[in-house]
Amino acid sequence: MMQRRLLRDMVRIRCVEEELGVIYRDEQEMRTPVHFSIGQEATAVGVCAAMLSTDVIYSGHRCHAQYLAKGGDLTAMVAELYGKQTGCAAGRGGSVHLIDKTAGFGASSAILGEMISVAVGAAWSFALRGEPRVAATFFGDGASEEGVFHESLNFAALHRLPVVFVCENNQYSLSSPIAARQPIGTSISGRARGYGMPAHRVDGNDVFAVFEASKEAVRQCREGNGPCFLELDTYRLREHVGPNWDYDVSSRSKAEVESWVERCPIRRAVGALSISDPDVTAALADWEREFRAELHEAVAVAKSSPFPAVEELLAGTYES
Ligand SMILES: Cc1ncc(C[n+]2csc(CCOP(=O)(O)OP(=O)(O)O)c2C)c(N)n1
Image (cartoon, rainbow, N blue to C red; front, side, top):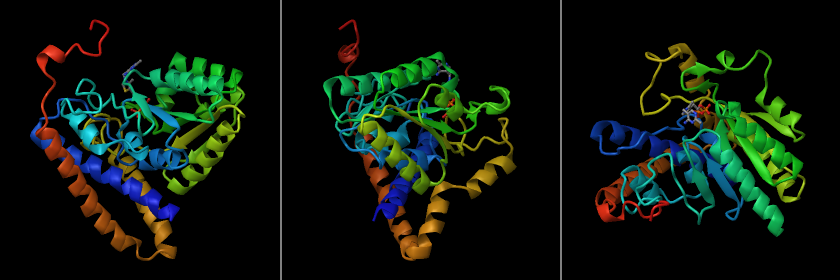
């Protein structure tokens, strides 16, 4: 049943990231910055569940959740974090440069906003070739302040391209709150509407609401009616980069973070589902065991894999 699948996918991402966070901190062997989506799983899962495997998504620095939700290979992702040749970017990219073409995960990049334009380019190619495929691009509220965001929305609206813009509004750009960066009364979805596309603001911690809104957005794109914008309100529970809680060191208060722990998308989905599906709590414990074991297996594979050979390091660059 779809609702269970949505919950299960969120639990998998949460388990993978929580375990990775502990190993990352304790071992110091993954030499890559890691931006976790702990607390934001509903956005990736709800949107990706509404897409087909032939559709393509793009993301930014906070990309593990979307990669996994779209069906990206976990073993290759973990190997990438360890910088190994078996990684999804052959150990050259690290956590912020994931890719899995088979799963329809086009690319991610740490340059804020860059992938918004690349997704528009992909959607343009679908339109020119007459392929019934849809592109989606995930980015934060901070990235919506980049010039490329505005150019991309304008171009996509002008050419009626099949692209879903997914803004994960977690209210912060590093430790800078949105109120310190945008004039009072600004609405990111409102700005998108100004470019002439439908834009919806949705509770991004309600996976079922995200899924319903995404189905509609993807349908509209696939039917050739042009782009659609989703602003999904959510909250990053851990520090901007790394596995720790940050309320002692950043501008976020403990009370604020805790209020969002209460609104955790997994808790909420369990609460909603357990009314009609009382066995879900028991299933949850089984899934957690399964996913934590799956992650540890991927870590073992990554550790036993080779680093790229020194003489191969320029392979794939412009110079080679
Ligand atoms: C072009 C560019 N400018 C600045 C940065 C530095 N930077 C990295 S992450 C980040 C904040 C991003 O905030 P947001 O887009 O809201 O995403 P979130 O981290 O909240 O998921 C910034 C400013 C960058 N990577 N690229």
